[in-house]
Length: 446
Image (cartoon, rainbow, N blue to C red; front, side, top):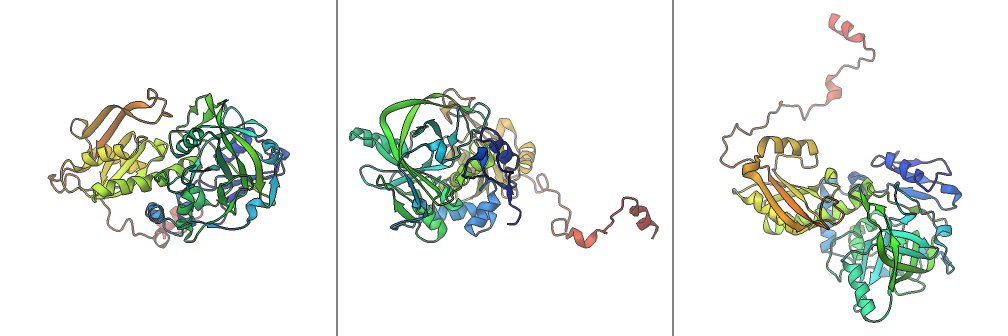
């Protein structure tokens, strides 16, 4: 765990430089930025840009992350409301967001400063059950943010509020622990609260406090809380913004959040997630993998593991490991994966001897076990991701590759070569410590 945080020199520019430094260290170190553009609040980025770090936060091995997350999603722990917490150490009722928080501009054509690591918490106007999600939030006025809402739970709550004739109360939480941040991306039913998944991951109820200006409950240990409302009828231009597919989300009229108050800790730290970086990708990948594995195993107990590959922006390319029992089963698994989430574009199904976390192994198995005229599944004109620029407004094609070994194949046709003892070898015990290049001749002369 040592040497995992880099500290930038004070004064990094909030426009591009913070993101440039964070992205250069992406996956290797988190980065702390003191006094960015002389702002009194420091910025941190890259907190969860490695799967191993998430495993450590959970207290499990890397191969247990998906199972641990899914177990938490299936057995949520109700939060505990407390009277006060560090998140409300300081209260600002006159709101100037740029003065209060150091919001960076990340990518070249981003339309301005954004909050990218903010948990947007809303309450069902009919039941009071909360929802937690991450939406991109562009600063458009000192107390107003443009927000991209997709047709999911936040949008459903918004329509309920509008139908009842009022704005939707919200809280935007910036700066939470890694497990709470990851829990925000759990794929749950409409009336399920992601903060309860966070409690399950922590092994105890999450402490929450009631906002000072509305009824939303927020994690008591948060760094910043922005309290406000999604306005019923206002729209403002938002975007472009650098998204996870490594392209820009378009500019369009979006919903607007008006902020009524900001609370924060004494000496807070502002968390930012660089658009399209590893922190952005992994935050969405792990919950999706957990949900997809559970979805597939309900119909196919032979499925052993799944992985959303980084080359497929941790959304579009799914690798599935299985112990095949009958011919044709792998193709059914492919169809099941497409039904599991509309973002899935390409699926590769492999045998249990393949490391699906190693893209070179997956490419090798496609090269040596797959034949397109026999093993290809192609589905046209299907729903995909609207952020995939190769689609037509989110409609495109899906492709599945059955890269499993035919069950009737002779034993040695697909038998992998192996040098006995290679994996178990301790190199330090068999290699000589030769420091000088010319010393090898002396060794041969001995």
